[in-house]
Image 1 (cartoon, rainbow, N blue to C red):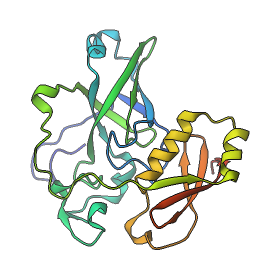
Image 2: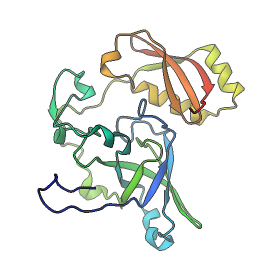
Image 3: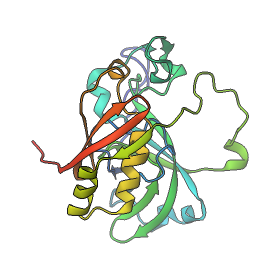
Length: 239
């Protein structure tokens, strides 16, 4: 991956150390920030060259930083100005003043909770509160150290906590939950993901039925004012 623009200096190659298995199978619906959807659980499979020695002591930390590549947006290039969803898509900010995936080097950084580590033939890290797209390449992992990295009173410009939407399930959707034998964890994942309002800004005034591929299922839902109604579930059929 280039460290600078073409013909402007040296370049370096960064290779993935592993890949993420996430319930978010498409860009639409992915949590906008880590930690907003605690029920979003994933795991990171490290490449087989990395042994248990590489994660010795990591389980002593509750949270970890995960550096990754926004692999699904590389083909779109990058933009110097971004319209952050929090600003209703009406105001532009510089790319380096946002967390947009459309960055010069398409690098991402997320703070996630480390649930446990399995050390078998392949090292697997279970994490929660994720905002990763499935099969995201991981390029580094570091422990989170709160006494030097937590700044709870720092000014954060337009990035502030947003009001959550109320999620309602139709009886039909609840019946399908039971039919597919889906557990409470999936119910929570859907609720927490939809409460964040995953709609693009330009579709906030439509009564269309949205479809989000979450886990192995498609979740169908509609918006009514500040309420989201889950109207149905169906098994996802890949194309």
